[in-house]
Each structure stands twice: as C-alpha cells, then as structure tokens.
Image 1 (tube, rainbow, N blue to C red):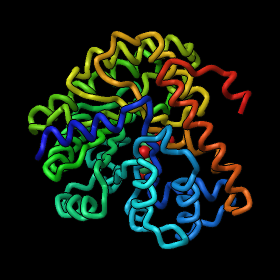
Image 2: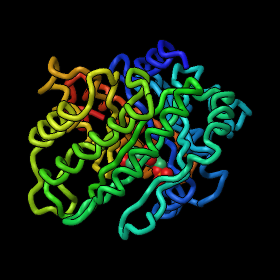
Image 3: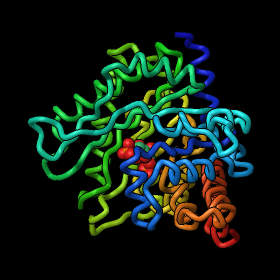
Image 4: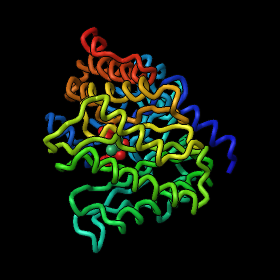
Length: 341
Ligand code: 5MM
C-alpha cells in the first residue's frame, strides 16, 4: 500500500469544490426507479441511461469521481469507448461499488448486514485493472425506539473496516458509507445519537483493522429527523446538528466527508450542504462534499424517460444539480440558482 498515493487520490476526490456522483444503483434498484417512470428494465436501457450521464458536457467541472456498479464498469458507449475511458478523458476518477448488498441479519429482526467480503481481494484486483481508483461499501442502519442493536452496528462496522483494509491493500481509496436511514418517526436528536454511535464504532474498527485514515473518504448520512417525525428542523438546525456530530466523531486525519442524500430532494440536499459549509467554514478539519445519487440524478431521469430525444434536456438537468452542489460546497448556493435554471 502506497500511503501517499492513497492520500493523493482521496484529496483529488474532494478537490476544487467538486464531489462524487453515485451512479452505482444495483440492477434491482435501477429497475425499480425505471419501472416507476415506465422505462423498460433492460440491460440496454440501463446502458443508454449511464451513457447519457457519462457524456454530459462539462460534467468534469463539477464531478471529481463517479461510482459505478459491476454491470456499468464493464459497459461501453455506443461507439465502443469503455465508460471508464470516457470518464477519464473528462477528468473524472472511476470508482466501483463492491458490496453485494445489505441482507437480513440473522437473529436481528428488522436489521441488515452488508455482504461481499468473500473473494473481495480478487474482485478488487480485477476492478483496479479495469481502471477503478476507489471503491464504495454501504452499510444500512435502521432506527426506531429499540433499533439499532449493538450487534448490528458492530457487525456492519467490522465489515466496513475489513473492506477498507482490503481496498487500501490494492491501492484503492475506500469510500466508507454507514447510512443511518431516514425512514421512521424518530427525532433529529435520536438520529444524531445513533449517527454518533455508529461513526465512533466505525472509526474504532478502522483503527483495529489498520486502515489509513488519510487514504479514505467517509460517506455518511446528514443528521435529519425521520421522514414521519412531526418536527422537521430548519436547514440551519440540520447543518448545526450534522457538523457538530461529525466534529465529535470523525478524526481530523480524514481528508473528506461526502454525504449521501438518502431520499432528500435535490434542493434540500444542496441547501443543507450549503448551510454546513457556510456556517462552519473555518472550523472543519475535513472537506465537506457530496456523493449523491438521487439528489443529482432524479430530475434528469424524470426528463429522460427512456427517450433519446430527451437526452440533451436530461443532461442539462443533471448538470444543474451538479452545479448547485459545487456552489453549496463553497457556501454560495441560493434558491435563485434553481429559478435561473
Ligand atoms: C444511499 O445510497 C447511496 C447514495 O444515494 P442517495 O444519494 O440517493 O442516497 C447510493 O450510492 C447507493 O449506495 C447506491 O445507489 C447503491 O444502492 P443499491 O441498494 O442499489 O446497492
């Protein structure tokens, strides 16, 4: 493992106010999103959609890295150019999702543990030979009055740490994604407590598994009230709760934190990221960035609808969200940016 190289790649992923584009939806997730909009759920439709994304003009001005899934990293543009090459040509670093999904956790009703460690060393070798420089693993933590259990937090944290160690051994930067879900009626304070416990456990396991914190990116949830919670705090309150939680739990050695959007609207995700960067500008030891899927892609998907004639308009919508999030990293996002688009 070359620590300097890992640190360089990690810093490049959060440089120049850019962020990550998560386009690593597994086939079932992608198909579900297509089905809702009446788009055919086929390999070719998924390829067409991913080609639309990677060929969006100027995308590299806003996006530093794109996370692909196993199917997409093996695909090419219609003219035969591999997607990895197309991304590299516009300065976007290729990443790959390597977990094999969150599965029901035995003995823990309502909880999930992420699988994918078996054979991971060999898969990482293959992906790195294909041109991937970083990878991603997502753990899912459900919240209610009694969940999460310690067993679930510890099993997922250990898997994240073992994944990260294997990834760095291969010279790839791990994007470590422990997601505390928004589903439920829990309060913002409850999300804050759970997120802090999860992050502390993850960093404990990263230390135990000898993971180099300077060669990783953390991809956490924002600290939010549950979707069904009657009290929904303001953008500034969410920003304060999130950054204070991260300041307590994330070591300063980590170069960057890139949030998942978790089902927030694109506008709200940008506004909250903006408030964090604005209010805590000089007080954060890490770069505060984004690694959104839905909060960047959703408007584009709703315009595209599987029709080639809609591709240019869909690309404009994608670029608009990427632009808003780069502005949010600077603390320069405002709602007028949405109206002007
Ligand atoms: C939480 O999901 C990740 C971020 O996406 P959002 O910004 O929409 O929350 C995302 O990278 C996710 O891990 C991938 O889409 C893969 O999900 P599945 O469940 O299909 O493996």
